[in-house]
Length: 84
Image (cartoon, rainbow, N blue to C red):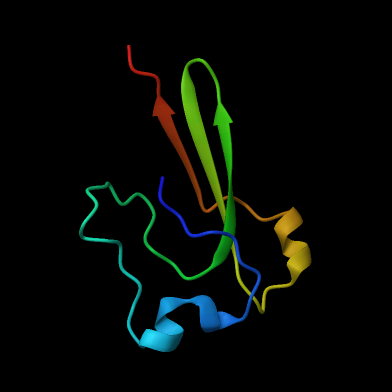
């Protein structure tokens, strides 16, 4: 799972704000793009069990009220089963 670090800063940290281009995934790293690249703050909960790893991804960005973080639905839930 590739992601940016959590940052609670103005929009200046996002690539499009200073490069004036859309965000795109790296072409140098082979990966399956399960969730489109987005310029939002966020965090992930990773649940590791003997049978699988579950990634739950949340996204938030001002001007959304910060209190929405407590009740927001996940943007993505992705499970990776254990290999036999």
